Image 1: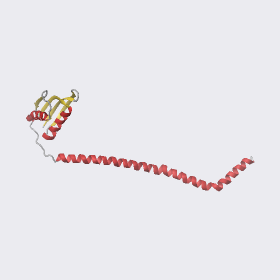
Image 2: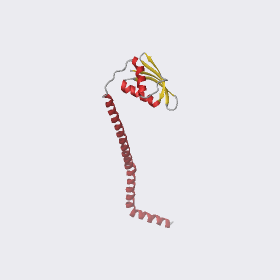
Image 3: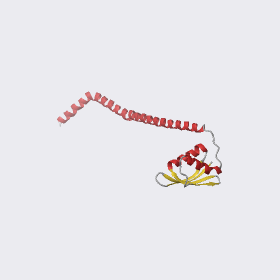
Image 4: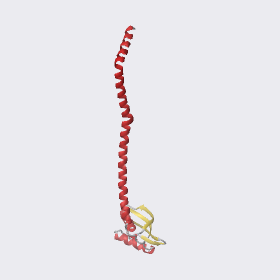
Length: 162
């Protein structure tokens, strides 16, 4: 028993001599770990997130700037008078033929406030026709139903108004 007591006493004496510097070093190391975990790492993560958010905002800003320029360019276009409802069937057929669309199977009829088209065309040329009518002739589609009619083709039932 005395050997064990002696060992404890020698260890206690050693800790009294060496303990405070060791405890100080352990506290400094613990403080460094706490500063890293509680301050440095969250701060670094928030800086990274802020940079990513800034990049996303810059991309959105560039897109909005491009859209603003496009809108301003469209606003500078002169206003075109809308064609009379009676002239719409002939105008739609003429623009379709000018774009190279086969209009033989189309049925264009006059309606009270516009024209109804029922026919089949390639989807791409159908969109080109709509874009041409809207941008160059102030004709818009007020009702449209599209059904697939084969590879890349659609059967359209559309009502146009000027």
